[in-house]
Image (cartoon, rainbow, N blue to C red):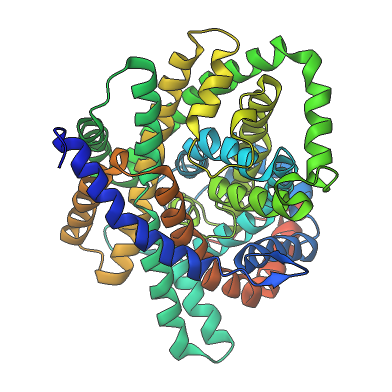
Length: 483
């Protein structure tokens, strides 16, 4: 025992989490050796599904982009916006973005660059582009198969379309276990310890104040105040905070890029060379590809089915509308925010001391990159990181609560008990090492994609027919059916 009981407790928590995280990671990220390189099969599973859906739906990530913008800004036909639900298209997108645009963007991007080299950024962007199609599919289906309670509350998510998919292929007895597996993984994924850990790391770095447990308790107390109000309060808060924190973070990032504008062409060249194995370090092509896709998926969650839970609460009479809106999520999260972060980290050279080392540094690298412009820029990053962490914790608490409602019933008691228990667990996040957190959360998140993608494959012919009918009605300007 040391003279610091808080540190003793932190060490004990870390020792307890590490073996669990190691075991889960070894199972979910099972990586057979192929051509002399260990390749996690779950990464191939995700990116293949995204590519198949992109081609099968005729590049909906491109052809539907303009319509998605029209829907989220309210410029589409008003007939498209009526229907059951609790929040608007904009609030649904903001709520889902608050779960994806978070410290995964600030902390995971430098981890991907440090572990897989700058080439990982190329594969992150490609994964984000293809993930727009996955997000379209899972969110449209989640709205189509959602359930509305007598009091108007929405209970929804991939649980229900997973059940339906197994019923379609005459494996109904397996549908419920598959949906239960998804719900358990979603509940585990809602323990977003990374958000508390990395926001505390930046807080301690800027202020010099440690107090990890106190920081966690205060952060999660504020989270509880929002999530106990349900999806309407979450949507309201997210609709205010997400645009504000995005403008703050992206504005600071663009300033750093502008200061280093002469280095931007060289940064893109470095990314390209690393992406295609021209730089053999860090595993070359496969090392960059695997780390890029893994971190992109952690950031935008495409293919996991998680943010489909938030999108399911939208007010709409037509499920396809929320599929279009949801497709903007990976674009904003990965193609815009992650790319800005990556350029800031690369042009500043902040990643170089940690290149090809274990992922023990995340937000510290981004903070060093911000400090390269102005010594007070890490303060802006502190504000952004706390806002990012807060909104992500809020959204994932809702996802976990919906999973708990599916498993144990949609009662107020289940909802409040789960949320308070989760907040108590999250308050420990600042006391656990980053490596253990990444392994644990990645295992939960990527575990969700196994039943989710099976269901997407089974239901994609139905989705394609729905899309054709929807586009036909749009061309004819016919009213959409009430649901």
